[in-house]
Amino acid sequence: MEPLLKVDNVTKRFGGLLALTDVSFDVRPGEILGLIGPNGAGKTTMFNCIAGVYKPTSGDITFAGQGGAVRTNGLKPEKMTELGIARTFQNIRLFGALSVLDNVRVARHCRTSSNFFGAVLRSRSQKEEEKAIIEESMRWLEFVGLAKHALDGATSLAYGNQRRLEIARALATGPKLIMLDEPAAGMNPRETRRLVDLIHAILDAGVTVVLIEHDMKLVMHICHRLAVLDHGMLIAEGKPEDVRANPQVIEAYLGRGAAHA
Amino acid sequence: MLAKFRPVLFVLAAAALAYPLMPFSNDYLLHVVTLVLVYMVLAMGLNILPGFCGLLDLGFVGFYGIGAYTSGLLTIHYGLSFWVIVPLACANGALWGVLLGVPTLRLVGDYFAIVTFGFAELVVLFLTNEIWLTRGPLGLPGIDPVSFDLTWLNPDWFYELEGEVPYFYLAVLMVAFVWLVMRRIEDSRLGRAWFAIREDTLAASSCGVNILRYKVIAFAISAGIGALGGAFYARWSLFLSPDMFKFWESFLVLCMVVLGGLGNISGALVGAVVLVVLGEGLREILPILGLAPETRFLAYGLIMVLIMRFKPSGFFPAIATASARNPLIRDLKKRLAGYESGDKSGTAA
Image (cartoon, rainbow over all chains, first blue to last red; front, side, top):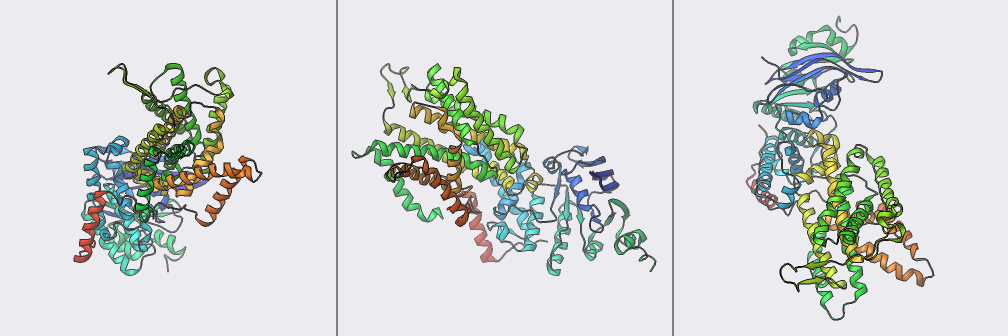
């Protein structure tokens, strides 16, 4: 099957620091890919390269969005969102002073077009667009279970719900691929179970998922495939059960010698 | 918070609108009120940058000056009508907003503020030194007042606005217009993009907002409104000089916005009333106390310090539910109320 996202020999260097070295992997449409590795392995850097926040020093990232595969390195984050890649952040980055609904409404930006004149003149098309934005935003808030909080302030939500709101915001951009950066971080077991259900629902809605996660139980349970990074290098890729048995992976997580023990 | 005072505000507004027609109305007072209205326009225009977009602009007065001189010079040299000049002045202000914004809006925080400060100084220097155009420090006297030229309908229909009363009403119209434009922008795709930039730039761009473009749009609209205020001011005061557009004017307008509450349009209006009235009051009182009138700037400084200490988000901070008046949101609120009672909370999957 044609991959949805193709990461090809990507290297990212920050001055003297090699954050990623020749990393290559594919994301296939309709799968959940887990990107794992110890702290500082380069997972979030990889996300940022894909999302357009960083430009890879060398290598190619190709995304099969609307209208065929596009080489995306060097494109800005807003362009990536438009192509169909949405993401959440490791440290929650909501628009704190805005309401829950407005957080999601902002995300409709790249799929709508009214401008200054539409806003001032309140043209018919602008009004219809505003209505559609609210409908679509509410649809995603219902999807993550936050509809009843729509008009509350975003920061008044409980921690787990803030993470869900970030996911709703990402989904509202109309993506083909969503990248979740440690979605379960700081969640209690009950919230984590609800998150697993949500991720499956996202997949059922036709959105491919890539996630960074430290909760190994969660990763092994829901990911179809895993890619393992260590010190900026891809050390393993494959099915969760194969990756779990890979001596290099065990060494990366538990230290030298552990694989033989 | 303003909503609580709404009936009081209505009465005050009605009284203010009726006052000029009363036999006891006083020209000095009307002059001050018209000045308040001009500053209301400026405060609403500036509010876009620090209030909506989170950009500190210390050079707003530069655009006010550009608008005023555009208006003054076009009147003196070409005798254009006020109604033609207003859009031209706004466009010229917005143009300079774009010219300044495109190269500098990549800067963030204090660096950007310094650039805007420098820009305002440049405008004053230009107005002072380019004597061939602006007559420099001598100023620009003899600007025609606003007139309605309907001679193409009837040769007798030519009206020139004289005295303070018509200018007061013209300024009220201008404030109402800018207020309406601001309210509509605030609750639109454009306004939400600005708020997103203010709250979190990275998250905004990952929602698809082109940061630089939306900052430039904000800068252009803000500059255009500043120029609108200037265009009116030129045709009202009938005299311009470069020192009307010194840095402290920028600071004064910024004080109004901060006092009222960053990002709150009505707050900016309150800030304009408080600070202009205070300034005029101090101008009267200080000489009685044997102090120079310029001492009033100390009072502004003191007010800013006190606000930062006790009311860091101003007297009327912008609240999360800013678009509560939108019928679509009201509608949604009703639907949500139905949700709660039926306890159909819509949990995921």
